[in-house]
Amino acid sequence: MKAVLIQGDGIGREIAESVKEVSAELETGIVWDEYQAGAQYYEASGKLLQDGLLEAIAKDGIALKGPTATPIGKGFRSINVLLRQHFATYANLRPVKTMTGVPSRYENVDLVIVRENTEDLYKGIEYMYDQDTAHGIKLISRAASERIARFSFDYAKKNGRHKVTAVHKANIMKMTDGLFLESFQKVAKEYPEIASDSVIIDALCMKLVTDPAQFDVLCAPNLYGDIISDLCAGLVGGLGFAPSANIGDKVRIYEAVHGSAPDIAGRDLANPTALLMSFEMMLKDLGMKEKADRLQDALMEVIAQGKETTADIGGHASTSAFTQAVKERL
Image (cartoon, rainbow, N blue to C red; front, side, top):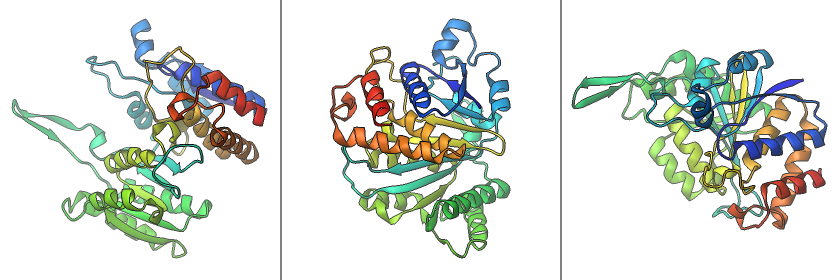
């Protein structure tokens, strides 16, 4: 089985190596097609993506991606947005769960954010109306809204979740967010066994930091989904514990959502947990649930014991030592 591996920038090479070692220890049989992308590759080659990368993802159908930076002032859009739009990976899936050993203000967070990934303000339809006025267009379609709602309910049904909540601002944006909410409510009727409700985005943020346990699956348009994904990561210790998957009909791209941390790159200090957790999601989707569960158990044991953890969560271990500890527990 082949899968594309994009190391990315900064610490990407180190945490990608961690995934390769764990994959071999688990005997997944995955053969990695490795490609470069990001700001560092651009500086070296003048190209944002290595030739053949898009074709390899299309052929393999699966990719695992490390953090990438966007060249500043070069006129390039985010590589993440580029890949999502090129492959129409319409659903961004972000599970968020508290872990023993990770400092957090909460003990009972276990929720999933499903973010519509292809439209809204992230379509990038904006222009200067005049020299003093910028205009951006918020694009919401019935087709994309119903599709992401149906994905959310299907995910809930498949994974034993009990409630799906629509996130919106339909009280103010009555046409765009109103259409999103209307589409969600229409789809919800097809799943009477799963509870559904809706919440206005600003109220949601307050409710999340007050009692996140009241939510199960959150279904959101692109911009709101992006914001609350990072907020929810903060509930469980930060982006270092936030895996994600970008899912389309033909391609799935799994990625750590944290940055490239250039200040510690090459120093064997990075925490590979988020990319390993993204790899865990990938294994489940590839039908390797037993291996995914073993990886999850090993990660949780290492982090809970706290003896071989990285500095970001109070430990003193290197990236390679943390990886070795996970491998030993496998």
